[in-house]
Image (tube, rainbow, N blue to C red; front, side):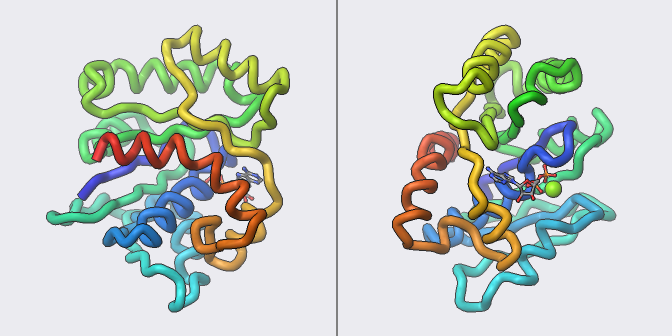
Length: 208
Ligand SMILES: Nc1ncnc2c1ncn2[C@@H]1O[C@H](COP(=O)(O)OP(=O)(O)O)[C@@H](O)[C@H]1O
Ligand SMILES: [Mg+2]
């Protein structure tokens, strides 16, 4: 199973939003999809509980007490982690992963903590050798703003590039409340915002 680890040292940057969206994108594309919950706050599993039975099916796994196994066979596994994980735990999870998706918020990216976290990831051999690529996502950004430019500059300085930028939209919290994601919708508004996800989904397809 292609395993995607969604991780950042910080809270509130969009990890669960991205995990649930990737799971919905994979499920609606017809993949067997598992969403593994590692956060004791259980936001991802709460979302899954609210999800209608009519929506594309996603299997939930509770990994809050213990990391489970990655099932054999085709399909996709998304791991939603809490903020502030111990370095050793991150290292163990990276061993399971085929890629890491790392969301950043404007204003957070220039902080030393993010830089330290990226450096720590880069110290892992599998990441350094690009066996496990890191997809950085600028979240809640508006294009052609100073914040977007600063993100690019910051990442260039630490040897990374942003794969895509997700715009700030009220649809994200609204959909989360219903156990849904943009990929479950076909409205014009949803289609428009879904375009932000195309570079990330093609990045993941290339890894797969
Ligand atoms: N692109 C976005 N536009 C608007 N709101 C967003 C966006 N991404 C995340 N949010 C909101 O920000 C809050 C934190 O996001 P969440 O995914 O729970 O972060 P984390 O899992 O990293 O703590 C949630 O209320 C979520 O709905
Ligand atoms: Mg979360």
